[in-house]
Length: 324
Image (cartoon, rainbow, N blue to C red):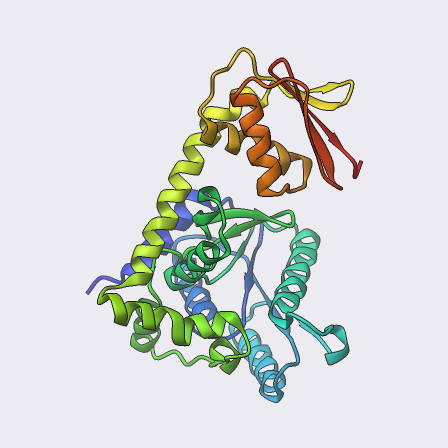
């Protein structure tokens, strides 16, 4: 029987890996990162992989201290360098602990990544994670472009992020671990009602699948894939237009006259990409108003916020960033 996960991970590495730079793997000892680690260890038969493990103990559970000790022993047995960071209760403020933990985790990864001069960081996200992200963004009212959720490759905090398992369902990962007789930790906070992620995994998605009588998670993943395709399409369309951004009297400006008329959805994504380059986000109302002003050829319109302002004059959009 073919090892489908191993074959796909091998293909993933073949497309991307450049020898000479280490790979950092975010390792919790849970099923996802456990499978990812041992898949990459098997791929050492084909590639000269220099793997480093990064583990962060959030200190939320007494068991996490023991898990960190076990991970240290595992890394020693595998002769892999382990980078461990331990958080304390006082590191967390009242509020969204899940988000704070995620921020601490990726900041730690980013600092390691830079110091080791890594090629990429490996994250064990899979298709069920993708479904959760897409569903969460649907409920939050995110735009079509934001529904792409997690991708096989992305950029974060100066890191190249690789997700080799993103096309596989959780059950496929668990089946692989079972076949390989690999044990893993089960973090109860992943299913805890305290956190939105836990409620989605334990209640929301199972309820939707039961109600609709089909695999809602797979459909959500497909929606995410189609959002990515649409986003990539508009990114290609807008690239030559964004190259015309210049420093004007009121900040950065873009003369759209050579490209008008533009479909409003293309113009909306163009403005989102422009603001991404500026490093800020704007409200839906301001973006919609700016798009409408350009589409309706309204000159002299201005849309203001604390972060900056768009102004439209004769087909030229100017943006003044108040944060610079």
